[in-house]
Length: 141
Image (cartoon, rainbow, N blue to C red):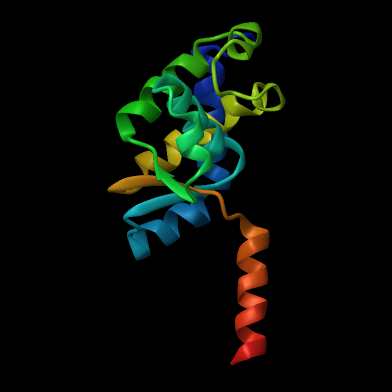
């Protein structure tokens, strides 16, 4: 539906809960304190926050930024309660992200509920940079 219904959110959460059970088990064991996301949806959340605060150039200058829980929750509510057309009008949200941001928001919220995270960080470094760094370190040691 557009916007997504509460029933669809519940079904999505139930499905993701099953799919992510190995992750949740690992989170219970290791008790992470910081949720770090890279690119994609996390960058979208950071861009929306920057646009709201009129700090878009500041975001360009940093490699990581904190996403306050209150801001995440506000944006989550806005995203799941808005239609595609309304999401297209959200400052900071790229057009290519307006469809997947709904599912990503539900997924992130579910993950946040499963651990006692102290903060959420968005890193501009993604998996590919991490793999390159790991490979480089193996070559130099």
